[in-house]
Image 1: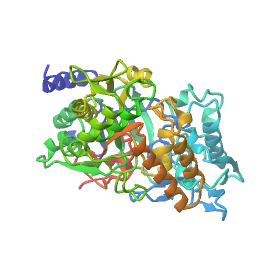
Image 2: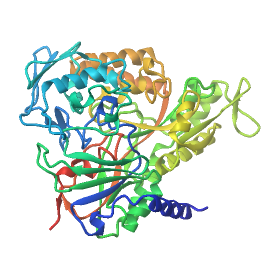
Image 3: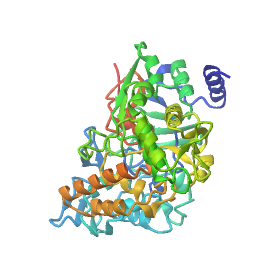
Image 4: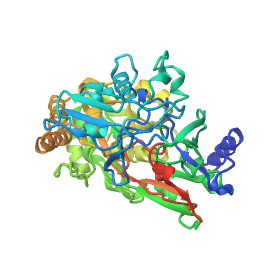
Length: 523
């Protein structure tokens, strides 16, 4: 079946089982919108990681990130008061805020949220992000004091974490209770319906402390396949969607739609598991690092909407370490392999000690960008004598294989280099879900990551992250390929759309709808 035929078949099937919303602006109303996203969360509970970096729509944090990515007050009345030693952060809560069930927000809810996230019994994969937190306590109904173990530079950015109501979770198992699918928050929207694998529908919170949104109903249609998302947008089933650049290009002549491009820290990378006999060999990892043609990927796969990636930090970030760029050099790759004893066999595939230089590379089915990256990577590797078999699968299929098999993965966060690198590279987190998927272990990197998160001195931190990036050049546990811009196509029916600098996680919390509560219908 051709790609077009497959897309049409999938579209027909999706439409038959679920029309996300018949009241979208494309069908006559401007007080509702339906957008297509690629993934959905496993849970809607912030205690389990939902919305931890902001923009969850259902919840607010003490602080929020504005369009310029600067911190601004949200549930807090103002930015925190920080002690001279940078170990104490004091927040005063905004007055008059209530949860969607009408109960008032208090400092106890803030304490409960952070204490529960850090509870060893809570299944939150990101709790190490709050490693610096020593104590959180309420001093009255409207004041919260955080005490740190060390002067963690980005701590204020961590307090965009959503706050949950203690009373709504009374008597529940935080990991499996009703709150995970029927949340109560302070955000601009409340959950109207969640049909797993199909759609998440929100309705405006009329009591929102920031003012009731004019978009009264907002639906996120979960459509994993990029081609199907584009087809449904063209058919008018969607008001907007995230699309790969080459599919977004097809909407440029549509006067009723606008394309929005967001710069990001979102990278695509290939995990090179140390437990695999081939990818665990340093020479193979170093050879692949220079065999790959990153510029061609940006030009041909991303249509210029991105940049080459040499690590988790984009080249235009002030945290990027100049001199760690890798030049595409196939001859150098071949020499590295030859010197290490990986010699070409009769079919051109290299062999060392009876082991063929071949391994599988998995990517999520329906993700066109990852598929294209995987195919290009395999093509470049083949020229160096390394055979890579690309395979598509669901994450349920891929995850159990990550210890041995390579994966076309993604990540990245603009907030702070600690966000980008600690979960990705720390050896103690190897194999912890999607943390350190390559099982990368480098004592020098471990030490630098600790120094980077524990020092309050910007110069010390910069030196630490320079060390990390230089070590990745010498010992790459991943082959970083590209940093991709996120491209969205949206009906031109509202004012107020904008984009932020985006992390890897996008669609649900990012995109032009990061501030949908501020959209105004065009007159």
